[in-house]
Image 1: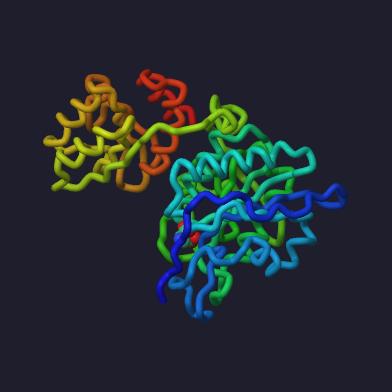
Image 2 (image 1 turned 120 degrees about the vertical axis):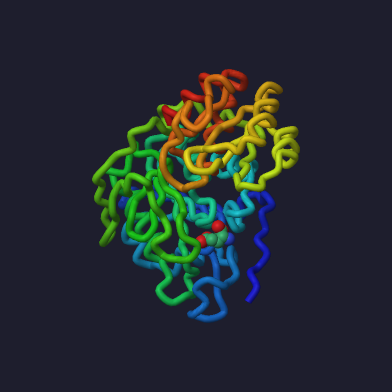
Length: 352
Ligand code: DGL
């Protein structure tokens, strides 16, 4: 079957149900944005082919009555779209809304339901820009609720269990999937269809099982209240593009992209390698003011400064260990405070 069109326009909030004043259980707000967790197939065997972003957040929650024993839940539909459609406006809209909800003293935590394709980018953006120690958990599913062995209900139930628990405070934005709790900084989607799709290079922060989180690690890099960026103050983000390297990549393509951007994350081969014919176009763009960040297309590891390329001489930046799509998020934010200061931009990659 064909997938439903994912509508990524920016609607106003369609449903903001009753906030609760009684404090018998923690108060959690669940903000829906679409994705597979809001998807529906025509039969239970449709685990990978289905219409995405069709179930309202209320419908998703009503499928797990067990969740109401954990928390007082309030749901609102912020977006209804596949996350592959999300751009900077969507990031800002999501961030500002989550920030607003967190400021309500009666709210103990926020859950954001989200498509899994770009969950890591939105979660990392929130991790770097929210100014709160309250738990924020981003959750999706690899199979729609209608499919056999769907992970939708359990992932959402687990996300609530994580959001209500005191041990989740101050850990930054979390991503819950497949009974694991990941830091938004580290997690990436590493598989296109399996339930076990999410990995953090240094391991998950912990597990969540039987409605209880168990943490074994804490994030070591600065996040949320320790970063210089507040979502409340950000009105626009600079244009940063990603170029994926391959042997026959032509310099004209890079020149065209560079002409229109303020930053470029170059997903180089291996340790951020750059083909000989590509070096001069990138240096030329750097001299014109474009920030070039060397990343790796390998999917893991560290890009060593002055390793594969003389970054000091060329005035380039390296990602440390961030994959290109997350390096893009960090560069956009780092450029807000230091639009021209390359040393400060490099420092951001080692701090966050
Ligand atoms: N349309 C994709 C997205 O919203 C579906 C993937 C998913 O949610 O698992 O990211």
